[in-house]
Amino acid sequence: MKRAAICSLLVSLVAACSIRGQSKLSAKWEELTAAEFRDAIQLSKGTCLLPFGILEKHGPHLPLGTDLLNVRHASLQAAQQEYALVFPQYYFGQIFEAKHEPGTVAYSMELQLNLLPFFAQAQLDRPHDYVVYVLDGERSRPGGPPKKSTGIDYHAGENETSNTMASRPDLVHLDRAASESGGDQKRVNLPEGVYTGIWWYARFPNHYSGDGSVATRELGEWNMNNWIAATVEAIRAAKADDQSLKLQNEFYEKSKHPLDTRP
Ligand SMILES: [Zn+2]
Image (tube, rainbow, N blue to C red; front, side, top):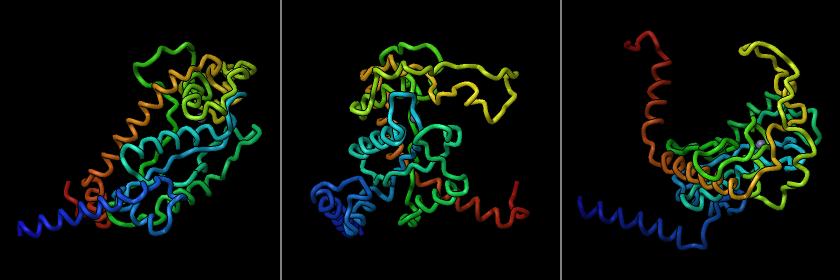
């Protein structure tokens, strides 16, 4: 029994070594051959990252694909530290509020909802396969260099511009960042708690919120490194998680006969 266990350990070590021994497997789904894809699923333990983005205006100074460029940068860096397969470019998120701006692609809600599960489930149907959605990391990370702007920084402002200076500095036009206002224009005055669908356009009609002109690469690298570390942690947690599937199966089994479920 013991001997068999040792043998099987050796076999799995050899298998792992031979996968790693090949020229390093790319984390990018689209760069793998079909045979390498099988190895990648094994090496990643079926853990895949789905960097999630959209095409939308980002102030006067950042590219339309900023979200996806940044989120893929963080995901690919994280996959270097803890191997995970990274899905091809996915820019089918919600962005109705910017459809008045050039270059925005606002897919219908129906298309978004139909495409996402299809994309996420492609090839991943074994019990322990895991899709980790990686979303845009515009928020501030604690610590790090002090921010220069003090106001609202929701979109294409100091944080996101700094992040892009870390991921794709060649696409940042800092000299144009002050050519439009990213300030809150407060064009609708309603009590807090009263919501209207036009609130974003009312406040930020240029689809710009914050001040990108004061961005620095130093802040971007701080944010990005923290974001990458959080993604590495998420990959490791997904690989180690043996409870979610068990509980999910239990939940759906109970949902077939709720009257039999004990309180
Ligand atoms: Zn963005």
